[in-house]
Image 1 (spheres, rainbow, N blue to C red):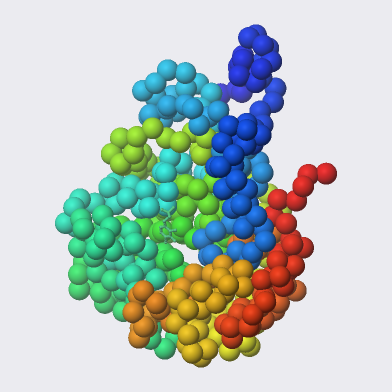
Image 2 (cartoon, rainbow, N blue to C red; image 1 turned 90 degrees about the horizontal axis):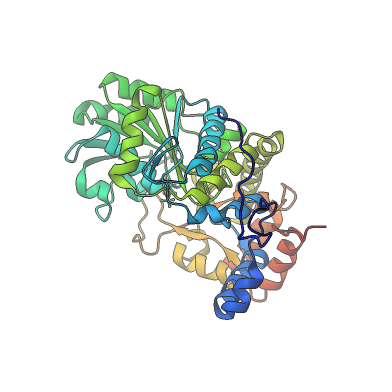
Length: 435
Ligand SMILES: *Cc1c(COP(=O)(O)O)cnc(C)c1O
């Protein structure tokens, strides 16, 4: 690894033409003076995030350090290519940032090769497909109505348009992936790749079982760990890295980093993955985002983060139990992860109505169409929630019964709950004023 050079000379901080920059602060005051209308929107969103209950499964609160990297002048830099091989001049310093991100992620996940350039989780999946497949190939993926992501075969997405998708599902009674059924489908359709990973499956995935099924038919195994990569980093979920040919994920869900994607693979696929990201499917990398990913990977390697991920899953278990006591039907009877899906039909409402009632109380949840749901996709019978964000705020198992009770009362359409919700979350500011 190259030595860190002296900070560059910079005039933009106002320190003068030759003095090196020693400080950078994203200047919110500048935005407020120049564009009060937009500044008002940003502040109102901060208020919304800090006065209502954030239970969207894929959301989290990044650290101030991550936000600082996102708001840095690295946003200005064009750096098409990879460290040491860029198409633009002046990349020496952003090269260091990208190398840090790569080395930290490789160490954190025990991966031989890492690409930190994908703009999002979807771009990471696209890169995995582009590296391993050609249009017309068959992919065996979790069916969307059972928890597959848009990139796992939606007709409205490149995946469904360009590939032959065969869908597997969960057992109607247990809600668990039926690995025997997956094996039967694999033998019948002989897909070139199998993808495992879900937007909603609350249980750990048996990556060894998927590997065996893939090996049996000589298929690639792609793990889409978009939701769980943070739990993997902290040791609260099993790692797909030893089993999958390619692991793709987001960096902004349980990993608590900036919005973005990542791809991990073995050395033998390194070049194909890199070319599939750039130049095949992307242009210039977002260097401010990559720097923020580097910051997040460093945070994720700490004992504090490991403890955080275990708290996330403990909170989810406690919340699932409390929601069941409130009368919701929790899918698979609980959770291993941060994710909970639950049937709200015992309350005489659809998922869409449940989302609305919760929203009226300041509780932000997603509607969810359950596997084998009788309701149409637009309404669904369920809700989907996650505990990553509330745990980042500092909530623990003691708060989960309160959260469940508030959800139960909201589903019963009780009025006047918003102040109670605001009082609860007010005790756990995600961005406490620095002292
Ligand atoms: C969130 C998610 C994605 C996509 O991530 P984006 O950053 O929204 O593009 C892909 N796959 C799975 C399983 C996800 O949960």
